[in-house]
Every structure is written in C-alpha cells, then in structure tokens.
Image (cartoon, rainbow, N blue to C red; front, side, top):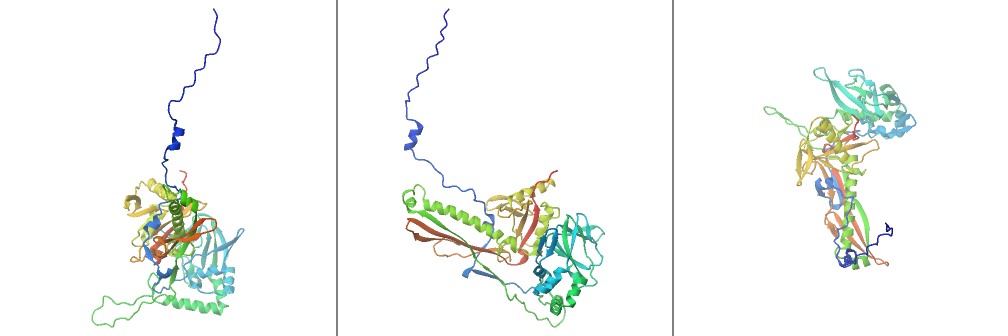
Length: 470
C-alpha cells in the first residue's frame, strides 16, 4: 500500500463580502466624554461653610476684651540629644506674655534643665509641693487625679509644646493638683521657682511686668477670660444696682481675602477649528476652576495665616487618650462647644474611626446631608477632607466646628460682584491675544475663613490612623 505523505492543501482565504469596521469608523461620528480629572473631590468644607461677604476685601472680628494670655505652645531647638527652649517662646507663658527683653528671656531659658523620661514614669504626684514648671519638648504625658469616691480619673493628655505647673513660679504654697505619668518616652525642660526668683530679683523690668500680671489676675473675669459684666440677681427691696459696660478688644483681628490665581492660555486655532461638539475654552476653564477650588479648600485647612488647623485655639486642641480615634475622644471634642455642625477628617482617619467603633460593637448612625447619607456620631456628620495632612508617623487630625455668624462660629469669607465674575467669588478676565495667537484669561478666586470665637473650632491632634496588629 502506498501512503500519500504530501501536505494537505491550504484552504483559500475567504474574500471579504462587506465593509470592515476599521474602514467604517472613518465615516462614523465618535461618541466622546468631556475631559475627566482625577483630582476632583467632594469638597465638603466648601459646601458646608456659610459664606459671608467681605466688602473691601477685609473682615474684622470684634470681640469682648479678654484677659486670657499666653495660651500658645512652646517650641524648642534640638542639638543632638540636647534640647533647648527658644527664649522668645517663653512669651507663650501667661506670666511672661508681652515681655520682650530678649536678654532676660535668654537668661531664664538658660536656667531650664533637661529631663529625659521613659514610658510609665511618674513625673509628679498629686498633692505634693509644686516647685517648678515643666515644658514638654517631646512625648505624651497623661494627667490623672483622685475622684470624689477615691478612684482615679483621667484629666488630660499633654504632648509636644504643652506645659504644666505654671502657677508654681510665683506661688510658694502651690501643690500639684494632678499626677503626671509618661505614656511614652520623651524629654521635658524644668524651670524651678528658685531659679526664676534669682533672675526676677536681678531684673527690675521683669519685676514690673510680674506686678502688672498679678494685678491683671485680680480683675474680675469670666471663666473664658473675658472682662466680667457686673450684674445683680435674686435681690429684694431696693438695693443699688451695679453699673457696668462691655469693653472691647482695642486691636481686633482682621482677615484679608487671599487669592488663588492662574492664567489660562488657549490658542485661537484650537478655539476656532476644534470647537465642536465641545467648546474647547469652556472645557479648559472648567478643569482650571476645579483645580482652583481644590486649592482653595487646601488653603482653608492648611494656610498658616487663616487655615483652620493653624487658627484653632490652643485650649480647644486635645490629644487622644490611647492613640486611635475612639468614641470617647469624639465625645470630648463635642463637649467643648455647643451646636457642633460637623466633623472633618481625612478619609483614612474616618476608616480608623470605623475600626474603633466596630471593635467596641458600636455602629454609628447616618444622617441626610444634601440628599446624601453620611456617617455621624451623636447626630453630627463626619465628613471627609483629604486636605487634612497625614504625617510620616501615620497620625492626622480631626476637626469639629460650629458654623455661621449668628452662632458665633466658623465662616468662609469671599466677595461677590467681581468684574467679569464667572462664579460667586471667582472671576475670569480676558487678557488679550498675543503675537503668537494665544488667548489668555486670568482666573482668580478670593477667599478666607474666620473663627469668630475660640470655642467654635476644636481639633483632636496626633490621631493614630495606622491599623494595629491584634
């Protein structure tokens, strides 16, 4: 038998019997989207802040005269393992507020003694004599006291830049009203009453300043530090009523509108020939405005002049008790102000809040905000804002605020009615066409934010948002 080993004949290629899709697309109209942009966020802060007109570009916050001084945080310089307090930073102490003799402040700073501590170390004991002030350069310290029924109660958590024992510098009978225990290792600087008295006795200018400070403390004031308004209540008969007046700050703070600007350039050939079905100039402008609004929200949070993180009163800044954001920490934020409108936190911080809630079997409710369901705690919405920074140690901050002029809260500032206004507070001004046929538009938005009274804004700082290993 003969076997045929020749290859099988190859089938002839089929002939195309209709128009192919690749060629057909040359005659078709392409369906296309508008230009997309990944950097657009929900911008809840811009949406929820009440916006107030700032005519003249400036907004002045008038307040009652306050005697509360020296509530800032102290900064230090580090040289290897050695830590020193910056002499001018001692002016943040109430006792030295407004004292500007750098030579004397340097002498006081030189008397501060460095003390390194370890986690779990008891730094001061409740009820023992207080003979020095402690300035915390680094670390976390918890303060506890004895409750009414003899149990230990938490008072506060202190961190970098805080201090305790300030009254010990002048009061020879001062005693510690709290026990201070180190939660982490760290460093503090101590200034003893004896060392301060040594500088005081040799400095007539400091003596006069301390006398003025002592007379200031003797003035009657409210718990908020404001000059008290004399009143009479609960009396009978015809007693002589006290006379009074409400004093104001002589130099109230003024907020000037800040600006975010850019120049949009569009070639006339593009605007003339490639303008359908979408208007090239409008699409370019839309994305530029989105970027400006994102920058505006970033500045409202982080700007050192008017940003909320930098303008929160130091008495309204608290530390978490254990690191992560717990329900107890959020409750402490809320209890420091009336009428809180919303929390503001980075999305990763909100995730950390959810983990802490879940670990305790707590499931927060949701509230309707502009037709959208958002998580809430105690009925106060928790809104995301990715402009709140996260440190390299995976810590962040949570803000809570009361808003509106009528509520003495936080307000946004802008001015409307601008020339060639495109949106409220934002203008697009034609700048002409240059010799290269490029059309230019100046895009500008003006804005700022103001905290009308200190307790309108609170911050939970140094919140640990990294996932813990169980």
